[in-house]
Length: 232
Image 1: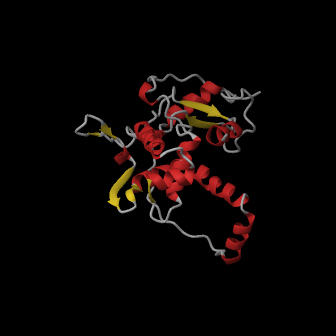
Image 2 (image 1 turned 120 degrees about the vertical axis):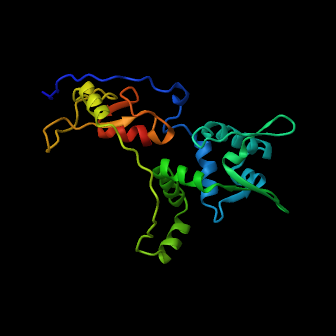
Image 3 (image 1 turned 60 degrees about the vertical axis):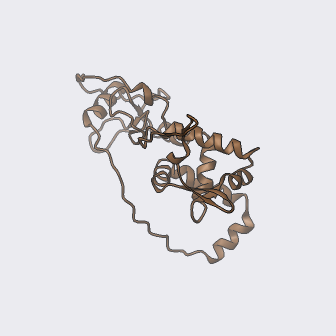
């Protein structure tokens, strides 16, 4: 029988409805392909024509519309307010890119803060996209491996962390009573430290996307279901 602590009281706040759709799966696979394309370029820059050719959009206009859609989706995260052009239309692309005119066309350069945000939020997705690309081209992979460094590259990064409220975690774990709130199965084991059921408290809307550190925005999950919410 799994243990249950005594009932505690807490003041609960509603989850911000404006952020209700901003979950880990907020980006579609086509969005991720667009970001991954820019991230693998040495200077993180390309024209809409180059993007259309590489990712097989049916037109340059389709690329522009896709960029607008993504920019609208994440504008609040970066507090971006689009400039109103003389024709009354809003200019959305600067949310994602710097831009300049070149002989080859108008060049978009993915902003550093967008690169950091994407790589931090979808780091595993980005890594496994590269793994998948390696799997489907074994000849190129073996050539790279033959000259690859065996010591991993060291990256020094600046990290933004969030100070979580322990009362939220305690309340959610008590609510779950040792039962995963996704699959409804018992916690897989008891913790050595205190003998309580092991569940992981997951924010439905990530804190990095503006989600609240509240009971309503959290759920207690077994490790399998927790991984599934991120990578399934």
